[in-house]
Length: 452
Image (cartoon, rainbow, N blue to C red; front, side, top):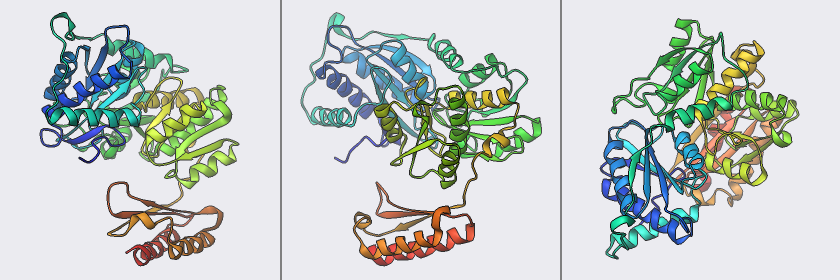
């Protein structure tokens, strides 16, 4: 069996890849693995379970709840809430386990399951591996040790979670948003109630789009993966800015008052300077991935801030932040982690802090985001090559060295083997888009020649 868990839980087409049986089995296995690890020792275990609005989340939630309760875990059902809300409530309520059902920005037919450990942190890889192994062992015939009588888990709805999470968000906002008009695109997703409520309580005048989830329309032409509607709405309503979330609201992209996109790198740059001003940016350091735009790195250097770069994936950003105590990190895609207030990317929190900076400075988001210039970035996927030899091919190393000499200090080359497909990603940045395209094309040819 291939590894079920990816970098962000288990995902697939609901009722095809991610079935009720699999979801129930993984939930029981998670309960047994955490019990073996001593997580439940000395007390009756509790889990927080939430989901995004996908129709399939209804039956998958039922499977998770049934699995956990059958394994002796009490369950608090928080209903439709963002992923970061489930993470927060897992920690705030002292729960032993959190479970979120969502496929984030994926299309509606997909769904996923993600587990959080005590404190609201993602499970360690070794625990996920152990859950898979235990699930497979029992799927093929080994009987479960099942509690009976008063030993079975009890289930109740925890509707207080909504207000508890919104109140938590507001404690992180350094100033009011009074007088600020903001358009919110909720992607018909998990933040459709939370985000408008939080922005309204913070004082903003809001216009909402994509805030009517029906179980089928999540991410459908809206949200952080489709910014067209948000750009048009910001201009139509004369708003100061627009905020877009994905289906589970763990990411945030923005639009300035002219309708121009503000990506995750620019958001990080704006927040980094704001946090430094408030003495909240520990070690004057920001964590980002190797895919961050070179313009972001140059801007941080110019502002006297340090940049630590990790592999691609918000979990690697988070690991680096936790290990060294850094306060801010994120990805170009809009996953932004503010570790003093969240254990995972939180799109609503990010949007609130971005709006707060606009309100506090009286400057437009366009002006604030201009602290960095996005250099042209060209990405070419080269298929059907031996990705394992990217780091050992002398021919390829020579081609990369030549490209780097041509680009100089204002350009960058990155070759990255795909983690799941037989292809290599060629990324080139340069001050000039034509130069970036030319260099990327030549490197793609070199990859085919050297690794094909």
